[in-house]
Figure 1 (cartoon, helix red, strand yellow):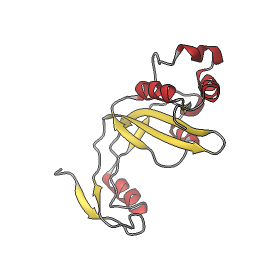
Figure 2 (cartoon, rainbow, N blue to C red):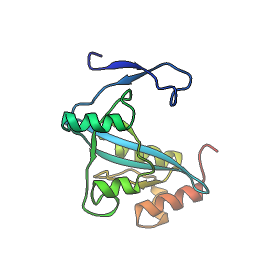
Figure 3 (cartoon, rainbow, N blue to C red):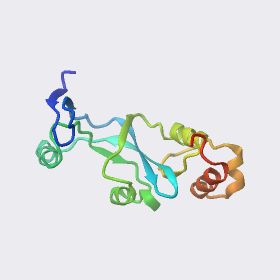
Figure 4 (cartoon, one colour):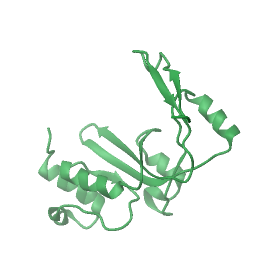
Length: 162
């Protein structure tokens, strides 16, 4: 709480009024950034990027913070890159990301989100989650590439909640 300032919310963004919490996250924390995109004709698709918070020079933070809204919380995040595909480098991640925002959670929770997505029948269209991932055994009938199988299985079985 000592590191948080409660600023009057910007009337352009928060028309109902209220306050916004402004803080700067410290670097070195493992995090997972997530975005749920609603795609016309497709429905919801999930993007997941595991990585870490980072510290940047204060003068750089001040310049960037002033370009958005200095009353918003700020977390500088760098995804784990793989050198190929959607996670070739940071620039490629952002070029493939649904928007310039995401929801950030503490810890690397991507495998849990992939499991939840398969249960809810929401395809995952990009992730950098390492290790064994759980998908229902029926997913194996929809091809060997996991991303494509997500889409085909979700389309075949339909949404759990419609």
